[in-house]
Structure formats: C-alpha cells, structure tokens
Image (cartoon, rainbow, N blue to C red; front, top):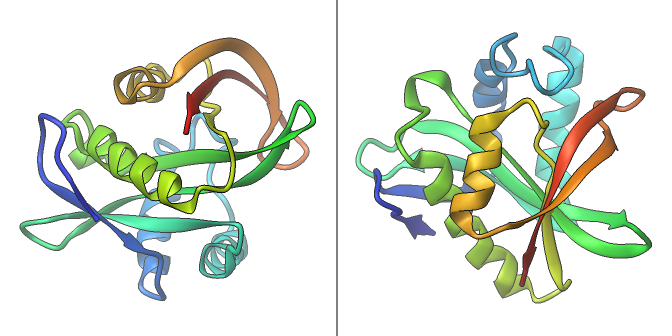
Length: 168
C-alpha cells in the first residue's frame, strides 16, 4: 500500500522473514528510550516471530518507494481497552529518516488498512507523554487526544502515555 503525506512516498509491506534485520536496527537505546530500552537478542527474535504470527491485526515494514529500503515498522493489533476490544497501533522509523513525514505517510496508509479490516470501531495509539514526535504524528493523522493514561509496556513496566483515538 503506497502513501504520500507532504513527504516522501512510502509503502507499508506485510512483515516477512527479512524484518528481523530491521528489528535489530530499531533495537537501540535511542530508538527504545520511550519503550523501556533495548531488548536482548532473544527478545528481538521473539518479537519478530510475534510479528510474523499476528492473527488479529497485521505488522508491516515501512519501505521507501523509490529505493525499496526498509526504514521502519508499523502495525495494528487487538487489545481490550476500558472493556472494549479495539485496535492499537505503534510505529518506529530509523533516525536517519525521522522528521521527513515518513511516519505520517505510513500511519495514513495503516489507517486505510485498518479500515479495510472493518473489525472494530476505534484505533488507539499510546505514545509516551514524553515523546513529542509520536504525539505529533497522532495529531497529524487525525487521532483525537483523550488524555493521559497508564499502559503496561514493556510487560511488567508502567508507561505514562497519552491515549489517542481514531474512529474507524
């Protein structure tokens, strides 16, 4: 699925075996500072397997349309939130490609993919309150800020997040 939002053209491509190399590039202190820090190699391998196996949602690689280079990840999955089953989304874009509209274009393409699923009424994003870039992406894509909340991520840790919601 191609997308363009006042920035470079990107595609979101279904997660595949070659995504493991991308996850290893994403697994740095800089990229994981809002998400509990880097994971062990075993945890990265397990995450990759979960991305391949996700059944109630989908994971994608964010790919630059011209070069075919994978520069990030994005996806959606089910979660129960306030007693209702909703979709949740999250993304990562590698540092050399940040600030160029890639995440907004990928999130816009993702919203179209989620709407095609027609499974739930809402898509939520829960970026850390201390992550201005991800909160700005939510705003630009059309999510509504519902307010701060506490999310368990990674498992066993509480993250102070913002609850952003988009009606599908």
